[in-house]
Length: 183
Length: 88
Image (cartoon, rainbow over all chains, first blue to last red; front, top):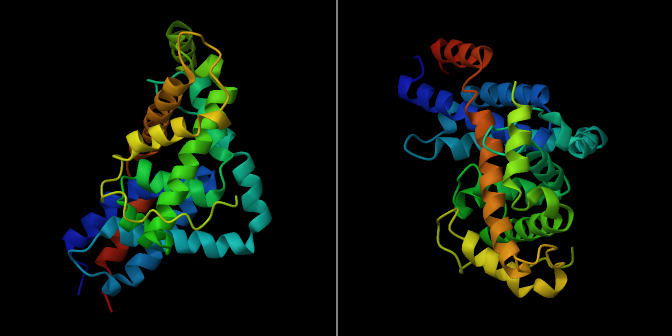
């Protein structure tokens, strides 16, 4: 019996955000794609444990996070190094934001403890509810809320302290930098 | 560090990005800890709120930058291949 095409399409449809989450965990696009691949292998091998009608993205994110965590324990040093270089791992940046501002943001994000960064990304970027984020991370909803709040406060502090010039209202400079950064 | 166990489980509803506003206000409450903004026309309290809004934008921009790359061919092939195999 082959996999239900609707389920297959749900898996495929989740891959782009799965990659974005993986990159935020690994800080490295190649390792992230390996992690996504491993996640897909694992998920499709155990697709019977997915209940149709439930949240496919949350299910896949949970598998990916668990894989990452078990690997993390094995390769702690390497991952910490990757965290340290997180700001430099992705050279491309969205065109609508200034280059300096954007890299400043990545640098600040890289300074967060990984559990806070993870919670912030799940809620603030992936768009998961606090309940889903808590399920994915295997912790209480209150813990996720606390991590997200601390992450936001810390980022705001980092950006306010270090980034007044680049983060401020100098739109002309940002526009020039953004234009220059393209291509 | 040290502020673990802060349990505010019931304060927010299930929405994800809604809490941006309350969080911004919270950082205003903690203003003594934050350094004041250097620009005179932008009070520190406002900077907190603007930075919070900016954080949300930047976060989504960074994330969507990857999402918009779509599904790499080798991953799409993998999913199709495994989907066509007999399931246990």
